[in-house]
Image (cartoon, rainbow, N blue to C red; front, side, top):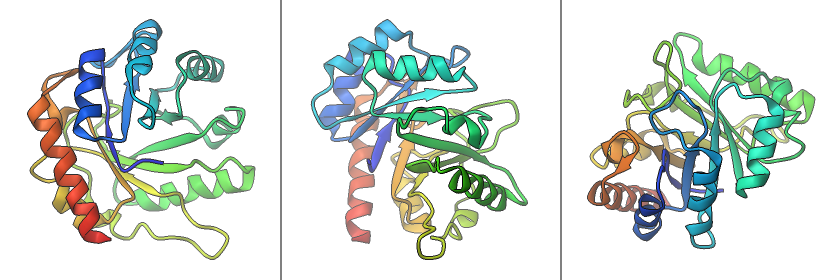
Length: 224
């Protein structure tokens, strides 16, 4: 679906910076309590400014299913990122719209909990297209700059034949300086950052974005 995603885009200008840097996905945050929140009208303008091929991901936290679906359609999103406490049954209410389900990795049973969640999704035939894992910070839903447990994530495995797990998106405290090491350690399908490339919450720094994208792309190429 994508390999390098820059989340928390709040302006057409920053969307252009991200696209020019070569990232293949942007995240638009619809969680009203976030410093990176964008209203639907602004999100439409941002989405409309992006070149073809850049994946548009909408981030939602415990929003009503009807609101998520309506926003997806109005903005012209490509993926829904559920970043809250939505149960598997919520994914079944997305009407076939593609979903990235985010988890905040909590020890000691973080991966087991993710596995149980995905098993429920499989049974309900509503498996997400990708699984995103972020750091767990009490009371926060991402964007904290805290690093996830890379070593724990090295055991994120594909399941038995016919029961493959969704591709893993690594998030949580990724920066231009550590993203290559994170990719080499965890071997995710994709990486995602917000605060790691900002000059202020919701404001992207061109140099940091370019460095992050270049470092991530090189690391993925080295993995083959």
